[in-house]
Image (cartoon, rainbow, N blue to C red; front, side, top):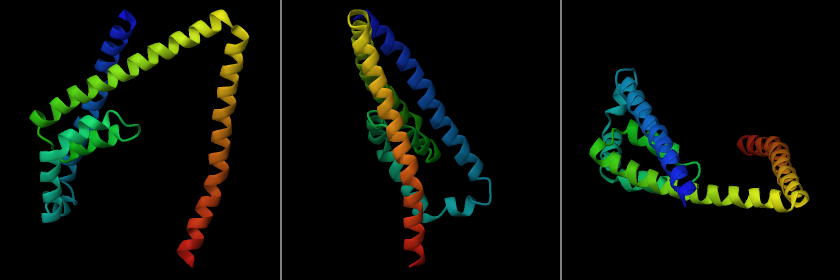
Length: 161
């Protein structure tokens, strides 16, 4: 249990710094855009309506984004660019970050203990499992790389026709 608590505490600090930093970068990027040639577009009625909606209702999205893969950074950056008020953003960051840290700490520590026990008790099986995982990952990478050019050709053909 002590390992999970330490891992969760470390992960919590990391996620607060990373997600908070992403929010800050978004905030600064938006501030710069508001001083650029895009300022007129950012002051349109449609954009301002979207900004108000995110400022008001974005906190639950930010909190839930920590339980997704691939959406978390975008949600925090968007919250920053849309100037979500800190009194709404910070509770979402703290709650979502805590859920993320606990989830990854428990799963991570559990997986590490399983792998450690597997290698200690059945080394050959542990090596075989790791080798199988590496082959599966390599196969997935090769499959995606071979498929990507054909998908790009299909998209280009659809655009032409």
